[in-house]
Length: 205
Image (cartoon, rainbow, N blue to C red; front, side, top):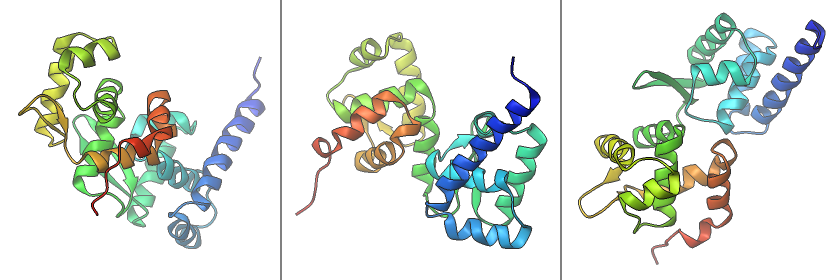
């Protein structure tokens, strides 16, 4: 049986772990500014660190992964926004958060869809196999062809996918860099792609 102290200890350990990640990230200077302005805050530092490794996370994921209360999460996110450490954007029904000033609009939309299981699988498979058809994607992801078609339409509407001649990821190197850079937060398929990323990059001479 887990005691209340045990839960508190687990929460503190989680917050310290992500706060340490924040200290080693490009957000470090901003986090220090926030601390100087508001005093020490493990929760605030942890959110900054968490978003450096998991950009595009929505409110509930941040709250649950960091084991924070709803009001506590709202308070710290709002304060970090005021301090311009993070920024929020709307993605359908979700409010998503990223480190401030680090991602353009295309990248924010890409992160939002990479945080969804089926669209993420589609984008990763198309980066790995640009010739994949809708049927191929359905088979690899174990979903129905109509599901693939539905998400392909959404991805096309958001400028992430072209369907003019089969399926093609728009700005594929940008999407690949996002997947590789944050692979640990996207799961096994992303980590596998990241290990072989050099196969999928092209360079202009």
